[in-house]
Structures are given as C-alpha cells and as structure tokens.
Amino acid sequence: MSTDRPPALFVCFDDRDVHLVHTLLRSLARNWPDHPRVLVNFAGPDPEALGEILEHPRVVLLEPLDEQPFQELGTTDFFPARVYTRLHLWTERFDAWGNILYLDADMVVRAPLQELMDRDEFFVVADPSETGRIFRDITDPRAQQLLSEDGLPAFDQPGDMVNSGLFLIPPRYRRREHFDALLAMGHRYADFVAYPDQALLSMWCFQQGIQPSPRLEYNFQTWMITSPHWMPVSRIKVFHGSGPDKLGSEAWWHIVRSASTILRLTSEYRELWGDTVPRGPRG
Image (cartoon, rainbow, N blue to C red; front, side, top):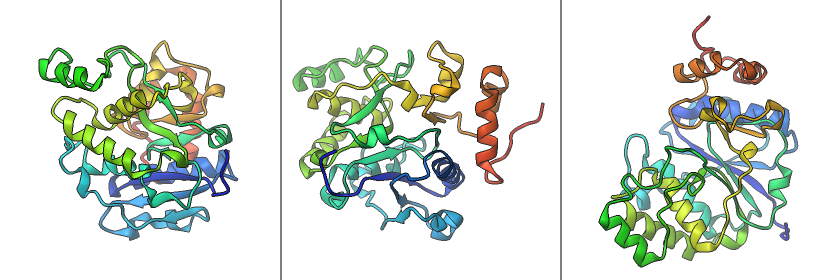
C-alpha cells in the first residue's frame, strides 16, 4: 500500500442495525485488535441509539452523508437510499484516508484482514449464487439495448455479480468522475436491476477491468452454509449475514440448527452478541 495516509474501515447503518454493528465491533476487538479506525456513518434520527458504539476507542463518527443523490436509484423498503451511501467512498470526501475497507453492518470479522488493507488494487468478492442476478429480466429488450450501447455483458452467470458487502477501495479510485459514473449508471439501469447496489458495483468493476475475487472466505454468506460453497469454519475470515437471514433472525436460527458442522461458529456469535441480539428459539 503506497500511501502515508492512515487506512480505515467504513460502515453505514441506521437504528435497525445498531445491534448488528455492536456484534461487528466486538468481532473486530476480539479477532483483529489492532484494526484501523472505523468510520461510522449513522443514518438514524437519534445518535443516542448508538450507545456503547461511541465508546469504542477506534470509532470515528462522521457527519451524516447526503442520501439525496440516491433518491431515484430504484429505492425500495429493502433497498433504501441508505444502501447507496457507500458510493460516497468514490469521492474526495475521504482524501484524508488511505485504503478504506467497506463492511456491511451484518458482518462478523473472524480474523485480521491486514492482507486486504495492504493491497494496491480494488478488491471485491464474486457472488456465486445460482439465483442472484443483476437484472430482473435479462430478456427485456430495453435492458439488452442499454447493455449493447454500453459494451456490457449480460451478467447472467454465477460469479458475474459481485457482493457489495465487503470491498477495499484504494485512494486512486476516490475521484468525482467515478462517483458521477456510478450515479449515471444507477439512473440508466434503475428500471431493470434486481440488486441495485451490487449491480452498480459489478458493472463499474467490469468497466474498470477489475476481476472479482473468488475468495469466499472474505465474504462468506449465510446461504453458503448449506451449499456446495461451504468451507471449514477455520478458513472463514468474514461471515456475512446477508439477505433476510440476519444474525439472530428466525431464518438464521432455522439454518444453523440444521447444520451441525457450524456449531462452533454459532457459539462464537452467541458470545459476540452479548445481550444485543435475541438468542433465537430454543430447541
């Protein structure tokens, strides 16, 4: 990493995910005690909801990032404007920092991630889901026309889409032109994409010639537990409670109870949660 600026982690969330960020910070303190500063963008109405998060010695609370530029990017209840605030990482606002590692709030870090922080290139993990696709209907002739005009592929194969829950962005990409390009692409494809945040990042990576990494240990998602992508717990560096299967949810507990091989992993989460997340149904 060729910069004298300090590296940082970045997380953005609102009131609904405060308990998840508690878990994320506890995992960092336990498994990567000398981790970089954590830049926190809190989009909730009451900063007092952050509680002990503000007492964490490595947390830096930012002035809330502007969500207005993202209001027309296909926002829904599941994809509110807050989802897009990570795109501000592509601007000069973060020039004081070196490499920045973005982490979704619903992640648990299980090992030091210095290998990522030391990289000179952008890093993001490919999403190998058989069902996760960028476009709702790739046969839509309007979408096909836009892709043809932009020289983009259909992104219709497993691994074509990236998972935007974790990525490393070096300083050289933090220029307004990249932010403007992402925003323009968001408006252009808003009517066609199924996963807007991941769609934008996938298309941007393709345009930049960035190859998504196959290293799922850096973004091991909940659904992978019962899939052919399962790997030994000891290899998982970052666990991602992606989709509706959030840590502590009914869906999560249904999955973990049916997969005896992750009992150790489940035990770790119980310890990290403390009293911030329900322990799930008994039995």
